[in-house]
Image 1: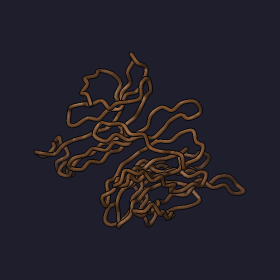
Image 2: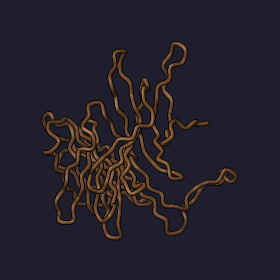
Image 3: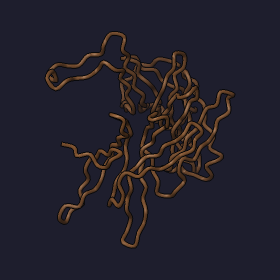
Length: 265
């Protein structure tokens, strides 16, 4: 990996801040600071006006490091995970012909392409997030919006998992470990005699890649899931939904828990 200094268009795609960084309501007029020994890391990409491509990169505190890419092609860095000795970053790079994008990951700065032969014909495939769990590395991705996953096995093999192949299914951008499962938020679009309706929920995925969908709210005019987290033992999903008000259809940010919609004040 080479360190670069750039003055151009930057995009941050994910942020990890270790515990100890925050602001209580009674002191929010003070600028929060990182505790000693806490590191701030971002992943992202930047536009290179000379080569006319996007370069993937990451920042560790204030130092930027460019990740290797295929010659003459754009690539993008997203979610990441690290152990004491390894740093994994999920991403995607430009495909060729009818294939717009292909999945990859970087391990300690070395790019590795992910297999896609089990997914059939597709236009877009991307790796979005990484979790290291039970001694294995799990990489979340999407094939034409539908959720998939790769498991990097200790012997070097890579398992390809289709989490949900139903048409109209979309996944959120991240996943978490919760209640002895991988949890992935998402939404499903279904047709009826009066049009299309959406459903918000999440998948529980075992360490062997077996998934089960749990619905939170159905029959929405439009809804989509952005990200998933957990708090007080409950799965939380952030997203957006459309609400009809008089003669208009308005979009609102939304928060769902396992019990349904959470009111945002």
